[in-house]
Length: 498
Ligand code: ADP
Image (cartoon, rainbow, N blue to C red):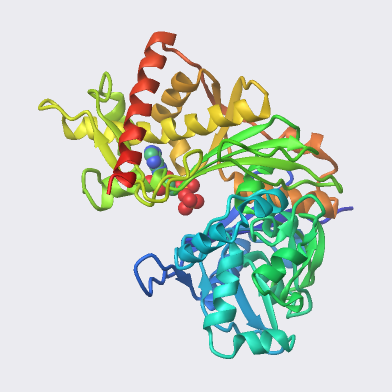
């Protein structure tokens, strides 16, 4: 009776737009990906052309449908997941952006955050939004656009403009400008949204001087946002969620205590804390999780800025590797890292340290250290950083973990996963489908549209490809971690010793 065969996940990332068609078993039936230009107008500034975001996303959607041989009538729903925090403003009448999108990585408003600290706003923001104030989030980027793009503040005050994160921009375009909406997870990264009251916060809107007419309506991540006619027939858009929250959902992290760790360009550890918003004393963020069926769940999040990017650095800048995948064989061929530690604090350190002025550091060099040792030290740094997040998370949640689900490009590295198991003492579970971000968006959309019946049906799709079991002594683990802590202290001392 049901002719619907697929759910489309639109995965709009920082460096590329991806689209995947999933079938009822959660298997990939068609996929396409396209990179788009990164714009660096000044050192530390990062922008995207909103037209590139839209055109690449539509291009890959059509390509993925073609690869699957899918007709629009066979698509049950569309789910959107996206790079978070990236900020856009456009004209409500024409849909034309007033300037480029300011990307999450952009540091142009760092001094604004220093001023915010002097204004004594840190605690207010932490309590309301769950965030540690940083230029990373959307609020100061939006304020910057209002104050620096000629004429924009006046137009905003006349109600002519719309603000959105990338999900809102896609929804607006997919619906031909009929719907201006975002979801809880994306709203919770703007630094303007009260995650407890689930509404835009007037005090923060006043502080950043944001006219309310700019703001999208905020909806649950799983539910009807609108319908699109852009892919043939009429298809409902029934999910939107930020990439990390979508990945937690894609890993079936539906219940309190569920955790996933993503090893992509950056590293992200998220724990579902259920209906309780756990506030952190150890540098983790409190944020809304993506949930289905009207539930409101929170998550604790630890973010490290550089993870797989450190492997790219070995490959592209140091030219010690031909491919990222080579690290696995090189690392496995050594007993250890020869006493070398590498802290990849290229843009400062994120959680749990939040030291913006720390820098990359290599310690423990001796005459016998080889290229291979350095490669191993860099690869190990991904696991050490994640282990710091795990320790903070266990302490703050009061839960003691036994296993960890992993995903992201570098999770393919079995040496790294074994090392993570050894350091953390946890069983590391790598699923067969590591496209968990797209899968999460598909699940959220498919649950809302009735393509999947319930969470149980989805849980059955999660298949473990390999489990890594801890295999080192407690003494060795303690010694390794002690060395890492000393290395981090060196990277931090560099920041402070002027
Ligand atoms: P993102 O979605 O953040 O762009 P991905 O999840 O696609 O990132 O992961 C890509 C990152 O993973 C790159 O930084 C790359 O260096 C790293 N990576 C990919 N494969 C491996 C591997 N086998 N070993 C170590 N790192 C890897």
